[in-house]
Image (cartoon, rainbow, N blue to C red):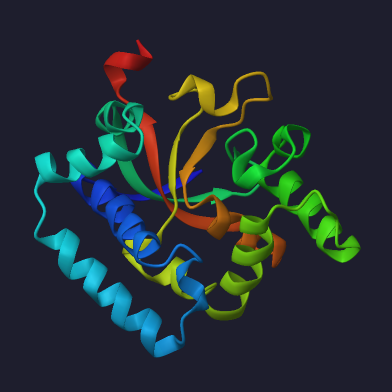
Length: 203
């Protein structure tokens, strides 16, 4: 992992809530939209979260998954570049078999790529729907737009996320489908918001 600059936790929370705002408006996932519709919806999401303070952001985050708020508050945040071999998705992300998500993001992406080629019945609707559409319409945007960068926590910050499987440097907390799509396309280094344990927590 390499870090370019430190950012505030509020910036990360805004990115999470912006992604939630877009998903909530279309359960079929944003990349179904045309380029113009996608841009318009992203602009609305950005305008929405820019008005939100920390307390209001927290209310949205806690409603979705309460441990996430404390996890975000408990680390220092940076814009960083991570290798797909250094991080991993949550156990069973997107309805994938747990064994497929036991390895790194890179390893999981390779399993999914094979499954797509074989039209495997083990691929759930969310994966079959989201990944091709991200690759088709939004793969570049999710790395250029700060409100769409994936969010990565230090491994084990939320213990249940990868209980019983191998640990890597980071756990992808938000943006798993985006990261998987990028990895499947051959991307080896991903730009993301990366959390680092505070010095006091590291001892």
